Amino acid sequence: MQADEATGGELLAPAWAMRPLILAAIGLAAGLCVHLILGAGFRSHLSALEAAALTGVTLAAGLAGFTLERRLWWASIAFSVSVALVGALVVAWNGSPEDWSVGEGWRMVSLLLAVAIAAPLFQAARDEGARRFPYPVVHDHAWTNVVLFAACWVFVAIVFALAWLLAMLFDLIKIDFLKELLQKDWCWRALIGLAFGGALGLLREHDGVVRLLQRVVALVLAVLAPVLAFGLLLFVLALPFTGLTALWEATSATTPILLFCVVGALILANAVLGNAPAEERRFPLLRYGAMGLGAVMLPLAVLAAIAIGLRVGQYGFTPERLWAIVFVALACLWGAAYFGALVLGRLDWGTRVRPLNLILAFTVCGVALLLATPIVSFNAISTRDQLARLESGKVTPEQFDWRALAFDFGQPGRSALKKLQASANATIRARANEVARAEMRWDVKDTSRQTKQRSEVAANTRMLHPGAALPESLRDILAQRYDCVRDEKCAVLLIGQTEALVFNDACFAAPRPAPSSTPGPIKEQPASRGGCHGGTSYHLEHGKWEQGPTRRPATAAELRAIAEGYAAGKVEIRTVPRRQAYVGGVPVGDPFE
Image 1 (cartoon, rainbow, N blue to C red):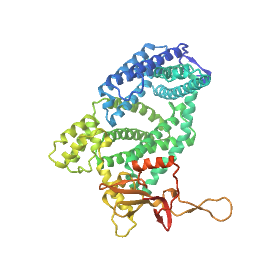
Image 2: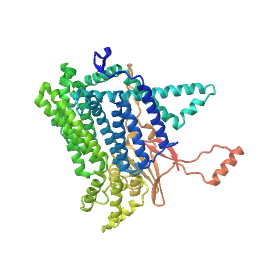
Image 3: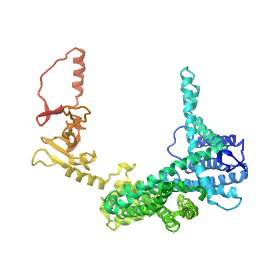
């Protein structure tokens, strides 16, 4: 080990001049292997074997790049290959990505999270030469890996920008070899691996630069800690006065927003605490900002737990909600740990937080690895819960989410749908048979949403002829087009029995004064949607209302007559009667027949 003046005498790994070349070669080989797996062109579907091979190659090359050292190089290779093999087996166990349901993509996120946590733990144990995990070493490796990852992708982007700049330059003089080369799949895939590996090797050979960059990032995040702490504390303190009603009305967005706030608080608080008491930032504003973040994490996590609980109570389990429950549980665990450390440690709370971070890291790594496998099937859990709600009458067949059962719950959902096709309930059986014939999720009608939209159209429209009623089929087409729903108010003008004009109230807002910086008469500014005065025309055809053109399309005979007349120069001006909508005595829109 040797000291580097640029890092204030910190102990750094000895220089290894061959490492940039080794990592560049590994990256190049990984890029070519990825091309051999994917083949030429864009692949939207992968088999289980291809997905597993792709995962194994990527993890092996990536982990080798981040962990490889001259000392105990074989341990880094063994770790990288072992983790890559585990990752490949997990992906193969999950089956072809083509058969994954909507929520199963989170298994890959869990796998990558487990790998990202395992890497600094291995690096710390390797440096110690034993199964010891000193928090300063783990923390330092974790931050370094994050900074290196981001910096390498920036380098890859710069390499591609330069490559395409040179390609365009040579293309100006009709030398298009480089341009054509960069468009070949094997070339740009190999270039990504080469650039990423080379950048990783170069940066790891200049630890002083990386550590300086790491300190800059940590400093910037630490400065932001009081800002986020003030905002979050103000939010929590305002809740008793504003009430929770508005928060629960937005339950679909409440949980992810609160979880992002907890994650942000966790990152910024640790940026202030550093990896050891000597590196903790003592400036009062930063210090109390971090303490504020530690105090607010638990209340936010509890609010997220209540929000997801309300969502589940209303609509039952889905794979996405079960994943949200897992994330919320981890947020509550982390929030409780930080709150307890703050209560017991007060100003010295960082001494208690650091070992808790290490324990929680092992916990999250284990949970993430478990959830990456099919051992726990959120699809099966969700399917059982939704079927129970349907069969108990808690939800009607019209309210039931058939689209999710058929396309979001994987094989358990499809098996349940087949079971419902033999249901004793005629309504359920008919709906299940209809859904089973759908080839894509959008082929399944969302009856509950359509019912809600139809009721919104009925509430939001007014008839311009007193006593007239809105035709049901016209209401249905407006609901399907998302017109006159939510807060959008409309007016309907019936023209006879087969035509109608639908006006949006926002088109007829009164003019508002235009801002002016000079004295003088106030100028009026037209409404923001003044161009839609003409309304939307609909016509009744074969018993169904359809949006139609304002003019009848010309027939084939008329088109021939037009062509012949134009060729003969028979163009004339005639005065003809017309029909047009008038609002307040002013003609609006185009004439129509």
